[in-house]
Image: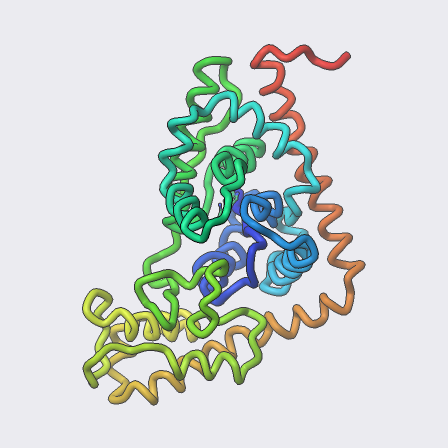
Length: 333
Ligand code: TRP
């Protein structure tokens, strides 16, 4: 069976974009067809200014939401990154494999560092080395496939380069993974700015539907989504991105297939938005309800995460031990 690994960074509340773009596929396909690990990558959340209490809250919430969305601890391994030491342990060896120039070329680093400096803030060293820790996450588990958004392609490419380089220098140790991406229609864009994806870290609230938003809030956000000039309802991703985004969301949420065909059924934006709002509310309803049950049962969630970390550790430990031996570190007697 293929090994799949993916991670969610607890830097914000999970969104409809995370759900449609990633989590739903983990739930409906990946955990059934593969040997899958899903990780709340809390160490990665420390690369930018953070509030400890908020991080703790968001990490637990991410884990509960992944369970609420349908990840089944009998079918996959769900765990928190910082519970498994092997990530940090392997990250150091990969820092000794990567080069300074390679890290500074990472587009996400350049963008985030520039933004941080503009605000007069300082850039944590871990922001630069972040992709190496991500490579460690992936390589520690002999991962074949990494389902991620397009913005992570470069990081997975780096992971491949590091795996190949390490294997060439020290003998075969790591599986060389590849990135897989969600289908085009599964990429949900910000409702206020359809040129950017509906991410969780950027705090432009009105364009982002959070999984735990109340139905009224969901409705308000959808009804206020920017559409494009023009009155007719047609599916045109290039020319009418706001409208296309709504049609994509409707198609995915209702399972009604083709967004272009759906467009033909509408003569006004208002009617379309109402249907999109209803569809999203219904899509999220079971997740919200299950999440409320899980919040009421923290011992269950703790137990899942404890068992997940144990299984993850057992998988990663031998791989990382092998890497330590391969580079010439003396095995502990
Ligand atoms: N960097 C990823 C993101 O920002 C999160 C992540 C960390 C990840 N480690 C990973 C994703 C390993 C896939 C595999 O979305």
